[in-house]
Image (tube, rainbow, N blue to C red):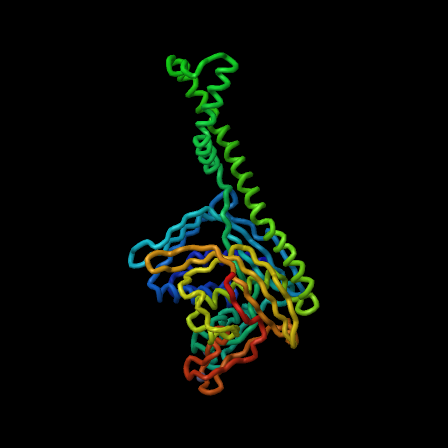
Amino acid sequence: MSDNREKTISDFREEIKHAYEPGAKIMSADRELRFCFELQRDRFAKRNLVCNEEMIDRGRFPQGFNRVRSWQDGRYETTWAVNFIDHKKTYTRDGNVQYKKKQKQSMYETVVDVRSGEDVSNDAYCCPNCGAVSTVSELQEGCAHCGTSFKMSELYPKVSNYFFVYDEAGSGKELFQKTVRYGLYMLPLTLGFFLWTSYSNQGIEPIQFIKEPGLLIKMIIGLIGTLPVVGFFGWFLSIWGKFIKTILTDLPLIFSVMSSRKSFARNMSRICPEYTFERFSARMMSLLKIVAYSERDEELPFYKGEQNDLFDDVVDITFRGTSTCRRVREKDNMVYVTADLYVETAHDLGTKIKVKKEKYRVTAGRRIDVPFSTNFSITAIQCRSCGGSFNVYKTKKCPYCGSEYRPEYDDWALYDIKKR
Ligand SMILES: [Zn+2]
Ligand SMILES: [Zn+2]
């Protein structure tokens, strides 16, 4: 199982670099996240946008770390993997740049795996429609020979969410450049200090440095010599300053995230212990993105809310790594969870793209009386009216005859989305 997890993580890091290329399939992602990328590509195309993304491994640990945090529930183990990248993102329309960003970041991946169970991905399966034999994993996006879609259990391990965090640290060369830059910032201060000590210790008046070239050269050499040292302290102080500022502004949020995990776990352990808050918020993020990028919300099988116009100009939503649980409530065989998702959204204003930090409050519900099955299942999907086969995770209407056909949908459904 563990080898598969490592492979999924490295596959995702490779696949996400090509996520916006035509026809790309991110098979290391779970089906919801896979669908997010497809819909987002459609939205780019509709708005005539081209998104170019470049992620280059960097830093002392270019291979990253595959288990920085881990959570376990009844059936699953969810882990965070991290790697360090130079992230470049450019949006262009008709050759004109609409947005450009370059940043050193760490990319976090939320990886879900089953704790025990057999791996069926390489088992042979005979398509009931055309008779062709494929492996189970090849059928995830339908039969390659006849197009029949299947309803099947997710083939873990999969990446279910990902996010980027600005990352200050870097290689030794970057560190040196940074200290020199901070040294230059602090030059006026250093100069002032130098003149003051010369005067108070050795009685040299500042004017003498201009009068005597020998003294001036000494002073310049002294300043250059101390530049990286002063710069290092300046850099160090600035990191502390940022750190303290973050703590002061984010402290309520940090507490709320910690108490969220606890209250979610406490409430859910009786109702639906197969979900940790980590796994739940990853799913919420994907569902939010699907609603955001989708043109016809009412055809989404998991969406019970109204047609949404909150996201009409949104071309990208990226999780910022933070979500909090507001409320867990039980009613008529259902559990409803309200959560806040902290995201960064890119709004296409037509002539440029504006990136904003936003917060969305989502309410999701799930049936309590449907037990989790630990057995793998796969069934071909066939429309009852016309016999056509289509992906029921993506739409509840048959694309051939338009009739509504939905096999029992028993996972999380979204009931409400609000911008906060
Ligand atoms: Zn087939
Ligand atoms: Zn049909």
